[in-house]
Structure formats: C-alpha cells, structure tokens
Image (cartoon, rainbow, N blue to C red; front, side, top):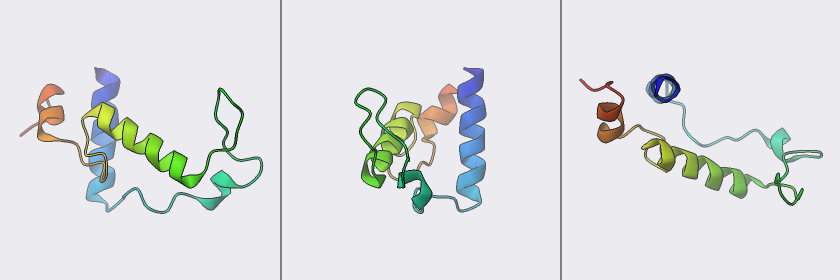
Length: 80
C-alpha cells in the first residue's frame, strides 16, 4: 500500500507538471532495445504504450491519460 501511495503521488505530480504518455524515447526501440521477457522479441512503441495503459488501469488510473481516479485516491487515503 505504501508503494502504491508513493507511485500515485509521483504520478499526480507528473500530471500536474503536464507529463503525459506521448513521447516515448526512440532509443528505447533501437537495437538492442527492449525485448519481451518470454520470447526475446523486440518490443515496439505500440507494445510499450499498451503495457503502460495496462499498468495505469491496474493502478486505478485513467488508461489513456494516467490521471489517478477518485476511487484510487480514496482507496489510498489521498483524497481531499
């Protein structure tokens, strides 16, 4: 729970500063780049965006914007 609170606070600060999902660094996808941990196949930008969306959703944040939901903030004691 403490880690979830910390990551959510960091995400809230990033959102407030205007940080979004756009602009993944191109060097992440150049050789050798990131690879799927099971297959060893290279991961593309679309794969990374999908994984980020999945992570946001699991945290209770908007899957597109990364903005923490009111429910997530309440659950973590960070609301209001």
